[in-house]
Length: 222
Image (cartoon, rainbow, N blue to C red):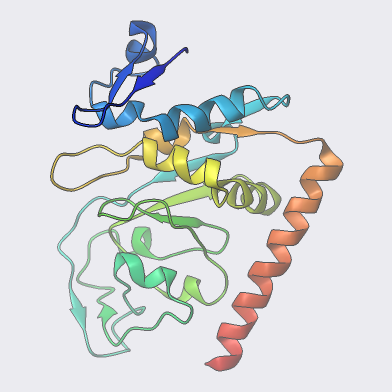
């Protein structure tokens, strides 16, 4: 897609896009979807010289359906409950516990090792968290889960999504007027460059070591 942008000292910023880019893969008429930051990120992937596949080829994604959340101060009721951005803390903790017997589909809200988490609504979309042994102790509701097909696929995907290009492509998928939202469908469409296997494994190993050290540090602090 060719895009041109012009800015004046007093007028609005104007971008021109082809109609074909609006109708595919899904109809998007919101102007922020076509900001230069996002267009350039998509071009970097398309012209990087490596093949690329959508996230949906290597992972599933979902946000648990909304339910009547019942929490209590009793640790015997169920797993501790985290709010959306608590998962991004260096040492997440909670004094509220999700009630196992009073929440429908309780297991759907339990975090599981290997998941990647990113906020599904709010002003700050894009931050990522990996679910290791520490985070798998918690339940959450309003956060998007990415479930990789394997641990290696998850580490590689996390490495890409943490780059400036990956972050821009996540934010491009936001929708909403007053509050930004991120849908699983938008995340599943993000293109991920596929490096040669040797280089890919360097990324996988680096992310694995970083996440294992972070996870072990959290557990030792506990």
